Image 1 (cartoon, each protein chain N blue to C red):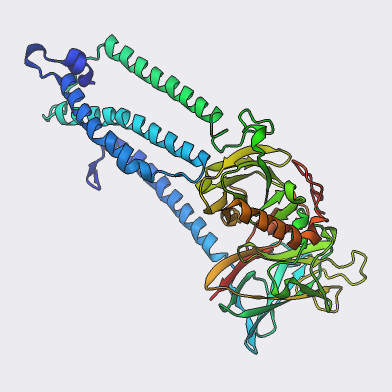
Image 2 (cartoon, rainbow over the protein chains, first blue to last red; image 1 turned 90 degrees about the horizontal axis):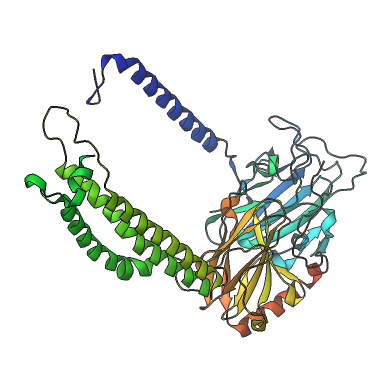
Length: 227
Length: 291
């Protein structure tokens, strides 16, 4: 028996077919893994343009409340039709002022590194918390951060009162639930993809608070695609 | 292996060519051609070049190792190629080659040469580690064996790794913490590398500094930059989802520019510096676990 020009003795055929079968199976598994890795990337959400400014509206929720991981903390983003989407990939235009409005529904966890309690890289070096500007936050009061290391942008997000009467339990959270509102602006650089993430160890129940949603794309980190 | 018997004593018996001599000649030609190319053509392009005392030391070691390795690899290749070309069975009939026989001179020579090489390189490496590069840019743990003289007044900089960001503290400047690493040229730097969560590895690529960042551990590494310019800082330890993004650019600047930069950072980050924990070689931040 010849296979691809290689002579295979009759008594070895069964073994050869077995080896070939295992190789095909392993290759298929590798291909499936790569395919799965590629398709789980959440969709990109485009910022809404108004008066020459790009607007991103986000919310952070203490528990997503839906499959596949209802207990995980997460970011959500509002699309141009006003619907909340579970994605952390945002598209914004290059060299444009971007204003981010962030509804924060989670309680405080505290920063592992207090250095990130200072607002950086925004217009004026400040952010607005419930209508009042601030530039630093008590590191213990931070619930999350919105940080883009490559752009030098970092905004700490204060948590809501742990004893609030109407905490949000499932996404998307309505603004009638206890929350803080943070807004800030920054100017985008040239085209490119910039990683952003939360730096508060906010993944409840995970080692160092940095497992689960902190290690999975689409929950507490993502990309800013400047196009 | 028919070659062993054929090359034993250089061959030459009963009309057999002197295979050993042939192989040695081929190897000598290969070595004479390739070694100078390695030293003068390839060598200058081997990283991490000469941006610091440490990177120069590593560059020189890389060139020396490659120069010594090439003749050894060359001998194997020449012997392999010669065997394929000369000792190949040319007929259809499948027959065994001549039986193997011991050749003490070759074995002793091989053992002696490799022993001298290994011990020589170990000595060379140890002298390099303890010599002028003071650890060759590697982390030496909390109690370094090789360090610059106290009279050189090394500048302490703490390198803090966390998922997924490097920050740097300057205890000589009020303990200010920054997201960019800036160092003065021609001054000894004493890095204290640690982590707030998992194991990272601080790697200032062009400067030849690499030290593990381990939570609860103070890993000391030394640097003496010899040229100004930018360099890359990366994490060299797979540390989670965004490990590939744990990078930034640092700067080597003149001493006066460094002093100006450090004072400016002190003022810029004064508000947050008061909220930082007191400078320490290690930190145990809370909360360790949430929920």
